[in-house]
Length: 259
Image 1 (cartoon, rainbow, N blue to C red):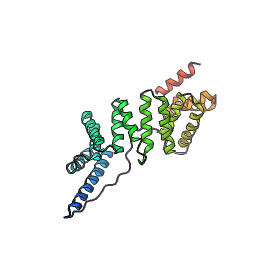
Image 2 (cartoon, helix red, strand yellow):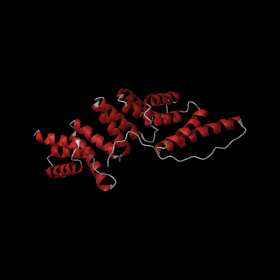
Image 3 (cartoon, helix red, strand yellow):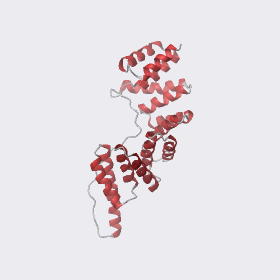
């Protein structure tokens, strides 16, 4: 199933113990290493939904370094999951204030703000994060930026962001769908068709992927525009059978009834 995800945790390994030394320089290095390891462990437990153990490791990190951006951002995730919105925002803000170059923290903060409906603030966080050319998942930044621009009615900017996300990854179904849908809205059917064909090919080749109501409706709009009745009938049947109560089926029925 194609699902929209604002954020994905990367693979995280659980770190071992740290060594000790009598040298003050070594002790400082060991402390920094300990903070890093506690944050890695805590973030791994957050990704697993084990918030009790995550909190324990992150609090240890903060005892050693109260300004640890990684620990503060991960604590923000815990507060967010626990429904403590005010505490979550405070932690996220402290994280990016402590280390303005901590891109993953900006992603977490931006996703939180998006969920709160604070789209202009979310756009600022994603926009600043997009400037980090060394970040290993820049596609997710531009995808989130595009979604935020969509909410703000900045449709041309959203197309540019989605295109950037799709071009950076060349293999993410969510990004291809978002771009195809945005291009149709702008009347750019030929380009939308190209990206949608890439998406359709992925779904056909990968048994783990299947059409969502959004992807079926996007394909139906393209097939309808180009007069491809066979494809339109096939996609319409899928939409009716798999998602009979979906809003997308209502939209498709409105599309054909208007003609």
